[in-house]
Amino acid sequence: MLHYAIVFFLVALVAAFFGFGGIATDAAWIAKVLFVVFLIMALVSLVFGRRRGPVL
Image (cartoon, rainbow, N blue to C red; front, side, top):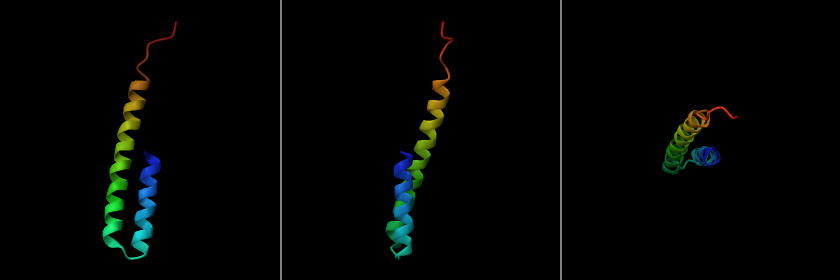
C-alpha cells in the first residue's frame, strides 16, 4: 500500500513538473488516500498484533 502511495506521489510530481495540473491533482489525491489507508491498516495491525495472550 505504501509502495503505491509513493508511486502515485512521484507520478504527481512528474505531471506537475510537465504542466499537467489535472493529472497531478488526481495522482496526489490518490496518493493521500492510499497513505491514509496504509496508516490505518498499520495501526490496526499494531493494536491487534499485541493482543495475544502469554505463550505457555
